[in-house]
Image (cartoon, rainbow, N blue to C red):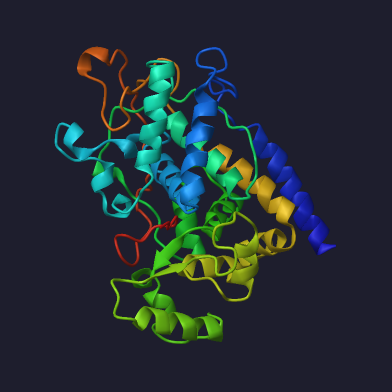
Amino acid sequence: MEKKIIQLLFICYFFHELIIVSSALQVGFYAKKCRAAESIVQQEVQRSFSTDRSITAALLRMYFHDCFVRGCDASILIDSMNTGNKQSEKDAGPNQSVRGYEVIDRIKSRVESACPSTVSCADIIALATRDSVALAGGPKYNIPTGRRDGLISNPSEVNLPGPSLTVEEALKFFTNKGFSLNDMVTLLGAHTVGITHCSLIQDRISRFDGSTDSNLFTRLSKTCAARNNDPSVFLDQSTSFIVDNEFYKQIRLKKGLLKIDQQLASDRSSAGIVENFSINPKAFQQAFANALIKLGNTQVLEGKFGEIRKNCRAFNPPAQQKKRQPRKKSFRPKNPPPRKGSKFSIPFIAP
């Protein structure tokens, strides 16, 4: 009976969330404006994936870090040398290890040749993430496009949740961006791919407290004791390059590496969602696709706002910036949630 209730709640959530899509964004936005756009994105992502399967984790992280700051406006792509004060979001601690920019550059170069000043960098990030998820065995989904690129990239605005937060603390970051508990648990399922570093899990391996599987604790203790430059470990100990529900199975077995991941399985508010995803792979696939679509709808610039950059790493010259950046409401809480651990601690850890 309890499992049926969980599944029913998920179905209601899923169909409710499907309708939350910005009216100006639409699937196939470039069908007439640049018919080759989505094909070019798919080709370049496939090219990268064929030699580096970790690109899925990298693009997921870039997507989250872009959308969770000023909204999905490609502000994370701006190089600091291309701003007035010589600083950009890339300079912020959490973003200094974000990668995958070269994939976006290759895509942008090709779409500019095919359709000059038509396809936004923000849409390229969203489409590239979608295609990389599908290549990694995740859900195949259509994502609305029509985003425009932002005119601001400020490192002081980068405020992301860290891996040592409790569920309650992390949820404050997500609700301030319009996401629910279900959204948060689903999006953290991106940890089914990617890595973290020993420096970010010291709170999990400094002493055995029963919250970690004993065999995993022993293995991690040995790995992290190595005199290496901060060894890396897979977040998903089983299917490290596949987007599946294995992550949820593992955290139910106390095999979560990050504190926030393990908390999802032990906190009463999120444990039921974790259980449902662990036993119902289709539920996770559907929810993950829907959550990524919703993430891509965060504070987007549309219509006459922003710009279509010719180079994703630089704002267009002032003469080409015909439209002003709209004033965005700040979604930061009056008393921001506490940030624990390293300044490099962030939820989407990728290689």
